[in-house]
Length: 505
Image (cartoon, rainbow, N blue to C red; front, side, top):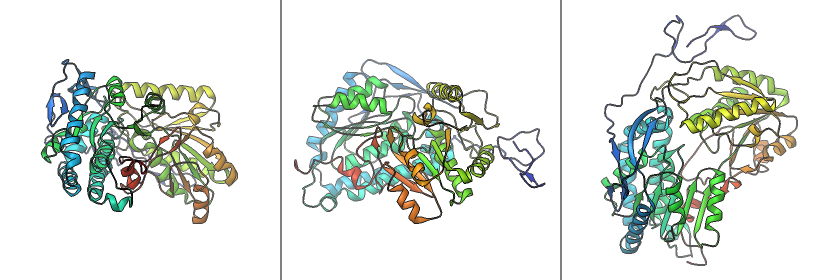
């Protein structure tokens, strides 16, 4: 929708871009839907165990649906404890008899093949990701799929160079890795987990999120096409009970989990004393600090990218905005104007900026926090864009004048909701940024490089960006401190997590 309004301080009209309004004579975006004709989705998906798709032993299934339409996409097998036993047994057999015995160079070839086939089927995977998860096709196409392929390419290169990566320790794999991934970046999270594990010589049992299982199952098809030996990668689908069965299985040597802090704490308690290796990548409540010497227009774009990317379904989202008082009015005014241009709607429309919330349960959680924020006294601002009548949607939202004690400041919402606070001095801004139970990420906006380095060195977070946000690369480690988890994924640190400790090696 276009809306001509006087720009502040000028008589010239200002264009606001949103969903197209056919009754509006102004300029707007015509629909630009991505074609789905070439995408083949089955009506029913089984478990991927020992190189083959198979029904769950109890015959139970669950539905996966399109959050933008609430329409069923497919029935998916619901794995029982017996199915998890079969998957772990297949992984152990493949590890003992094939994968650990294979020359590292040959393992790397298989990982490389997965990357190539993933690239070749990139358009199909991007559409499937948007259908199943609700994220805009631009993000699936331009971020998720290329990054997933890049992780397989990167770790394929390290497969035969482990002794160079970790000299003097005789790098040895751990065995069977049990991996549980979330619904916000389904294929990318699968790549983060699977690529370093198998490149290091381990075998895998992966459990994708119950609301977004399809691209993981598409990845299973790619693993078949790449000729990976049966049992090296196994994928079991289901809800929390299935994930718990994977994590607690006595024949799993390593656990890798990405998800909420609450579940991460449960997993750590369950693994205590078991001798299993584990990495936990958990929640976050990152602060984006904008200083008075920042390039404001650039900072506003970074703020929008930091919180509204993937509907705010990002553990490292910049969900707290800390602005120096002297520029706060300017930043917030420009931020509101920029938010009004964001298009909320059909994830498969290439004009869409913010897609559907992943599930009814997640939308209910976000709406509960919107109520909490108002009740606590923060001032809400929500854009005026229309949203579809059907599906799960949330307009971009600010909470102004938020206090440090407010729950919308302290707790992870995991949606397109930004809490805004102001600070006066550099030290105060750093103190506010660190006043959180989390420590995953953060951002700093300043025209002075020395200040950016000085501030980021004092923020207790695992990943920090300066004058940008949400930039990822397979060579860079990712992870946090405090309640944001234990260990790192990505880069050599991600590979290190799938090898025997130095003393054992």
